[in-house]
Length: 67
Image (tube, rainbow, N blue to C red; front, side, top):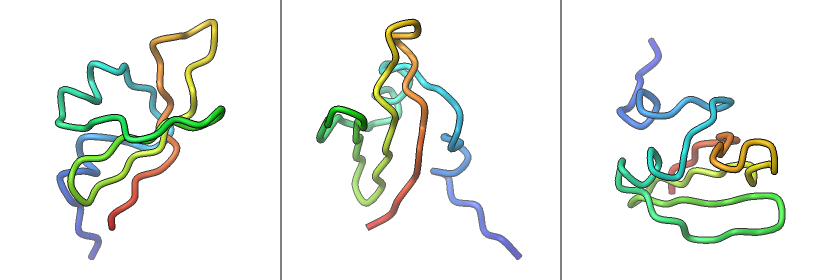
């Protein structure tokens, strides 16, 4: 049986989220490269695609990791 953690209920890989949505869940931006943006909350690390010019407020979730 697959156990679903609260993190997996809050965010779904492949969906787009605004900066406000991400930060309202307690995540803070930790690093940004030319192609990725990372947000962390405790042991949870989210990696997002850098927003595109046509949709500057949409961060597409690439992956969810736990440390």
